[in-house]
View 1 (cartoon, rainbow, N blue to C red):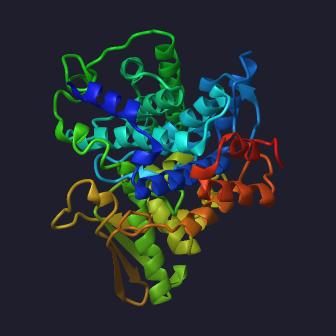
View 2: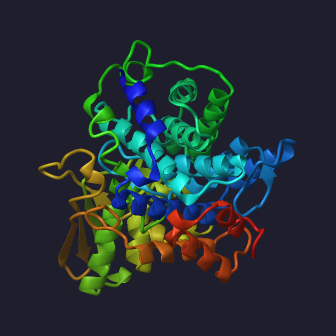
Length: 459
């Protein structure tokens, strides 16, 4: 039995009762976080264009675009919601392989599938999301070749969302295998959008959510897909990574270990690679009581997202700012916090922030840590003050990592903050009801009331 068959077989049998309690809790946390970022991302550039285009196509009203409240075909709702959930770059990350995001592809597809069905219980939704995210994380663990220019959020998102959607649509083992094969036919997504500061970065997550649900629906109708999509000739790892991969994580402890428990959550709305430097900067300013005007120059180690130098120190676009260590560090050092409001067209022109970003340099660490841990561990920030002092701050496991996790209440506070940035007002009552709903998701007979709370139908 190949890896694809093994994954389809276990997913077809997976039930809520088979999940360990930490996996159930982790799914609830990830849905809370993903919906938070969707609310906050709903007003971001590019999102309205996607929603309006979906609205312009006459389609069966099967599912709902969050916040906007439009009813549309389920794959289109997944497209809209996945795009808005990734727009802030504030969503979950997986830090145990090439870094990428999971919930923005899996959760929107799963919720749209649940609506398409006419409802699904929390105990149906939770194992589907757990399996879809687990598949994506297993693929990341197996990817030894590095990113190679691929946007794994999208590339693997097609597969994770297909598995989750297919489970909710109650596909058979054979149908799930076909759904994965159809999803593989669509797998795409690259990192050029980051180089060019393009809005397609956020769109790629939505396309993956849409494509995965579409794959499951096609499989449900008897369309077949390739059956050996990970390791066989012309399959994913030989085609996308020239055969450089480790097959063990694909099926190791399948159905026993669920990597949804190993997700990190973001306390700051920017690329995960910026977070150790943000945290070190904030701690340095707070613990040393430094004022921005006292700073002469700053050095960060190791050098991540410092090139091209002119773009990183003076971002052209919001996407540039989200992927800039100098910009995000300068925000932290000048303002003492890094918030959603720091990633608008107006705020990225703040001359005080940009003047400090221009004085932030970088150096290599003498002993580099394991390559992907660089994103979440062992960053160093050094500040030279105008009166000649040199102050240094290092970070162990960055806040939000499973080794230094955000609490449920911290994630709930993030949800409230993101809701305040929604393109349409969401009442405090609806926000609190949604948080409470997710806290007891496994007890809910139907997840659709949650969607109504966040889409203008129950305020």
